[in-house]
Image (cartoon, rainbow, N blue to C red; front, side):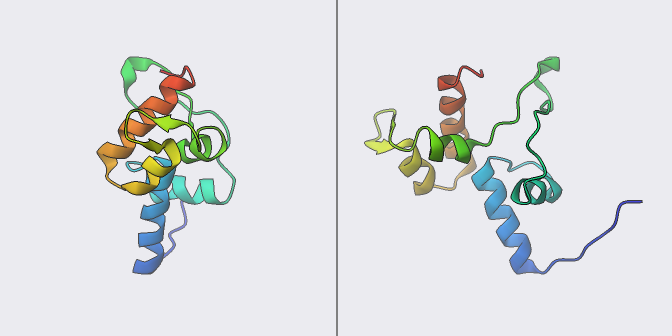
Length: 106
């Protein structure tokens, strides 16, 4: 049986923010907690994709470590600035797609 923990609203809101920052908007809270604790560093397969295996890549890590100063399209912003400028899921998904494309993962 899996243990159940109770968290307050403030903690849940912070988990949601971090899930967005990690690019895991549709993942369960456990995934975000595993990342924060450093327990989830292995490659997993993604859901969907017609059976295609997708590596688990933390978008924010790639942006901060490799693309922080790289211009994002013709926005006049770097990838890091573009990511921080808007928390809209569609906006960040587009940025993630560009990062993965640059990494050769799509």
